[in-house]
Length: 141
Image 1 (tube, one colour):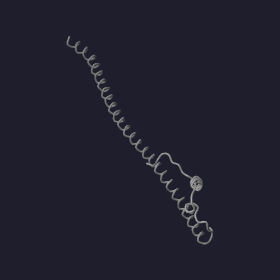
Image 2 (image 1 turned 120 degrees about the vertical axis):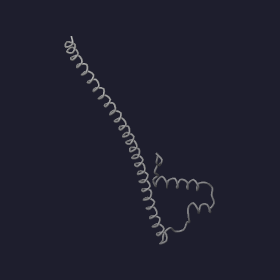
Image 3 (image 1 turned 90 degrees about the vertical axis):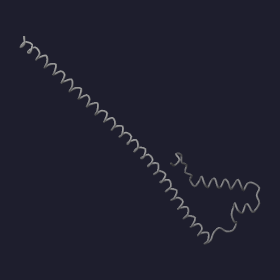
Image 4 (image 1 turned 30 degrees about the vertical axis):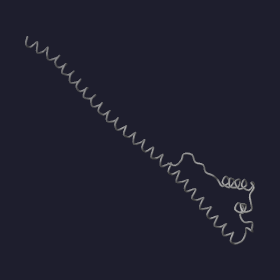
């Protein structure tokens, strides 16, 4: 699962931190050899070779941007899939609970129907006995 807190750095933050780090390193006492590695060669910075490097660097930057967008989309898709899976599990649990409750209610209603039939049968037998017993007693007396 991807981290819940994401922070995307933009180019200004990254280049700003690199520039401030260089500035801090250059302000301290350093010799010319260290300055060469931090500042680069002091020769001219133009020409066909530098244009090719700049062109390749631009292409690399574009690829990096596209890859960062793709990674962000994949992470967002993963989060959506996790949410969908959670909702699916919840729905499945609710369906199981509903099914169990429906079975329980069906049994209750069946027993209630049986009880009503037994009560009706008992009342009809009592009524039948109440009406027949006086007739039988009158006949035999």
